[in-house]
Amino acid sequence: MIAPLLRGLGLAAWLGLCMGAVHAEQELKPLDQTLALKTCTGVITDACVVRHFKDTMEASVIRGRLAFQNYCVLCHGTEGKGDGRAAKLHTPRPYNLTQSMAPRDYIAQIVRKGGEAMGRGKGMPPWGDQLTDEQINDTLNYLMTLRVNK
Ligand code: HEC
Image (cartoon, rainbow, N blue to C red; front, side, top):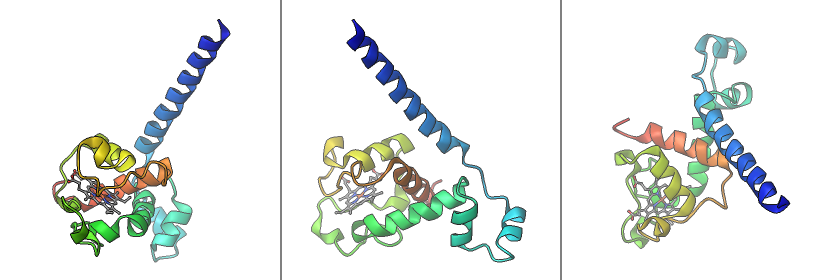
């Protein structure tokens, strides 16, 4: 009797957490340039934005760029064009992310689960175990800025 109830509660908590994460993502605000100029004493550097304006889209994109540089450039290249050093080793080739048009939800899934789980090339590894939810969200925010068609 009690076990299904607990499971139910667990699921509710889990759903709540997920919705909280989505909510937090939507709450990211654009950087207040005037405040940033004042806080960063005239020079708005990445370090200053990340330190003082953590909950802005700009800070998330900066963090996302760092994660991308660490984990993705080897295949996708420094500008995400699919021309990294290891690109030639993969068939199909790493995607040119500047041309990506897939919905964000799909991109989130392929990043978490990898290419194979999505019926795509195995060359795209799964990152769900390696990166935190925040890192994945940040990376997605960064990927969106790379797109030619925003
Ligand atoms: C070992 C090489 C490799 C690494 C590292 C890699 N990818 Fe990929 N990625 C690929 C390949 C290959 C594909 C193309 C799969 C296909 O088209 O079937 C791909 C496809 C994708 C796609 C699909 C784009 C679309 O619009 O369909 C996304 C998004 C993506 N990668 C993001 C990332 C991110 C973010 C990282 C770093 C966290 C990353 N990749 C790291 C090889 C890699």
